[in-house]
Amino acid sequence: MSIIDRYSAHLPATYSNSPQGRFVSLLLVRKVESEAIFRTEGSGEPLNREFVFAGRQHREGQPPIPRIVISKRKQTAVERRTGRELLRRYNLLKGKNDRVCTLNTNTPCEWCVDCMLYGYAAGGGGSQRSRVITDDAFSLHSAETITGQRQFNALFDSSTMYDRDTGKRSTSINTDEYIRPESLFIDIETLKDVTPDELRYTLGNLFRSARYGAISSRIGKIENILAGVVFSDCELFSNLELTQTVFDVLGDGKDLDFPLHPSQAERAVREATTGLLRDLPGRFVALSEEEVNDLRREIVALYSDESALESMLRQMTASYGPRA
Ligand SMILES: [Zn+2]
Image 1 (tube, rainbow, N blue to C red):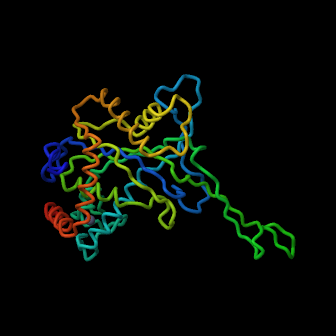
Image 2: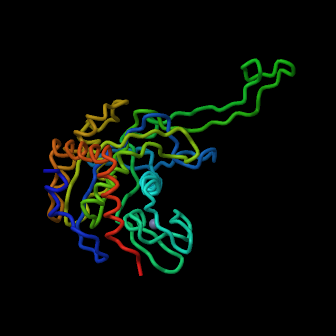
Image 3: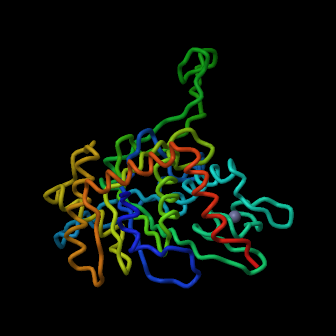
């Protein structure tokens, strides 16, 4: 029996627009695999960072550390696009007023899988709250550890910064701050009142999204590693709490080794989650490590089976029906 079917009692069977307070939390380790920049490319701004305490067991008087932040919008925007490519391939982005459903314009179709799951706000007043809830993600390590400066300069023909004829130094130097490969971000993606198929679709988008950061850029490859899944009747802890607890699990208050193997971070996420769940004022069921791995295999199998995937997407779209 598939993992999602085994836990389907924790999910609504069909979409309904009345909230039911059923949550699935996907605990993620986002691993940076090539230089990444999370801000408008070439804007010259530094990367987003926040000063926060390193761990939850932070001693008074110890200074906070700067952590790099990936804004929540940067994350879902990429995953939505990944899913929409698929919907477009099967002609499942619907149209309204002769215009096909488009992101960030006034023409959401109001009944494709993307509109219904990730939300929309139409000019005419219709709207759907996103049922995929994300928050800013924090780097596990301090900003100093995981960032570098890359100098972009215009070299002369001699491949030097000096013009041999005039002896003048090139003035076209720009530095860009980037996030180092192997940097890890700890993140929770919370799905609210999603059906089993909507869960499959969201997981597919997560596993298939690889390029984050500046849109025009070919840098910023990220692997999303699913470290845990929790079904619950309320939201879990915050990204920051989880990141700080993972930091405590891994270190003894000092900054961590870099790079850190992602499997160490995954294990720490599971251990931190077990600890934090003890304080959760609600009911929950957490998947075991083995079940999480089975779930991943299940999604990979679904996405490699074109007809199964297409029929799932068609059924989901039909279940929403055209909005009145
Ligand atoms: Zn749509």
